[in-house]
Length: 482
Image (cartoon, rainbow, N blue to C red; front, side):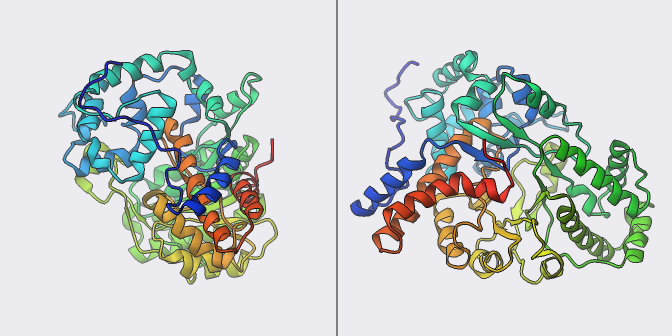
């Protein structure tokens, strides 16, 4: 790569995110070094299994590092860069998809807009450690860096499976539609040359809300995939159970559900059957109140199914999806304009937990984008109910500062064992090791704070750090050890 006089060196500091106090920093270094090279367990993410199964070279640097990553898209968009300039397809047909080089230039021109953000921290680690770049991106070196990245991606070492091994990934969970045939997962499981584990996760959000304009189509497609008529509510539940069994047969250990709120009040069988039948006539067939009641009942049924079949139930409520309708209409979902809502769990989940909170084998992992509920609700719930686990900071709060606050908030009520392990929640494949490294450093800093205040011994801190990255996610997500 040609060096330029305007570029600044890119070399992440070895003590980044560790405490400033020299004594605490020394302890944190020791704790971090004990887990720095531990295998990555990623029980919740959005990488497509076919990417690894097909093992084809990545098309270009921008398509790999920028276009699929909504963390990157949203901040560039906030600073005046149109999504059509970042490789997202303009559904209106007004703008063609730009070449990858042009997309990379836009990131480089706006590099300083990421200063102080976790996205920049991930990028710095990723660009330096994975791709060998030695300068921060800038307008002056954008083309040289793009050429360097493109050349690297053309090498066998940068194919998806080679990176899977290089990243030290032990388990990678994907997120999959309930109608998916899971053929890519089956190919990977049957391939003796692939030693990693790529597991599907059952995600059926669309069936929860009968007011959605596509609800009837979604329900019909699930019935078709299961070979079960879904015109009745009982039929839909039977089809969902069948599809869950299909996922379990392909290695799934968990479901994931994203709903607006955690309401879980069950309905009498006759009432949910009536609302289902009305919704089958079209979205106008149900009132807003009926749609909410149906959704809350479905969340209760989801827990009921998890008690039956053993799938871990992940719950991600509290996000207002597609906040900007013009952007949704022009570029589709997952383009950076999903926004947080106020979270609540204790009362909304009470019906579900009254029924299943102490059920043997039931695991309910609660996530939030409203960190005020960690100490007020999620920590205390996990500190009483055997079924409840405190999910790691996610999305808007998977940041160094928020992860530290999460540890302090949840540990007081629930300790470490009733947490999830780190969740990278990413579509950006090459950022996975950087994101897990960030969490390991922050956890090392938190554990060091307990050591220097004589709440833990250094040996306890090391053992706890090791459990956070291995034993705890394996136990929470029912992942067998390799």
